[in-house]
Image 1: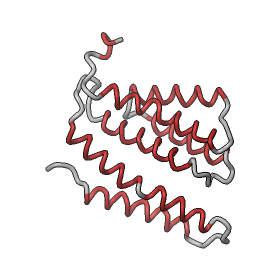
Image 2: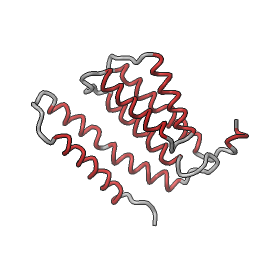
Image 3: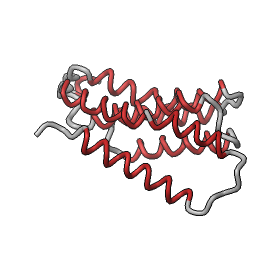
Length: 171
């Protein structure tokens, strides 16, 4: 296999293993919430995760992320189990690892400065997960408020912009 891929750069195995396995970990977090996925779904998520690891810039990533999120929404109707927090960490880890892996071919070593930049960005985004979970618990039984989805989308856009500005890359 290495004949096709060439020499694997330092750090690439770790990044690509995270990309392949973290979506599966996010799905399996629903076991802690009391709702296990079907075996065929576990295999599908694993296959897509491996595909994403091999081609981190491909649509396999978006596909597997959407499937995992859909499983959380469909499999756990309420979706507000505490296990959603480690699942969000797993999905964010896969996304950040794929982003760093996509900066070059598998033979290119991972630049430590680039990896640190994306780690800081990921941690900044991760801060929102517990706050969002707590807010969801607070408003769980409240009647829907007009514009709540628009406000949520604006908050996500603001957080992404803030992360970009505050943690901009090297010049």
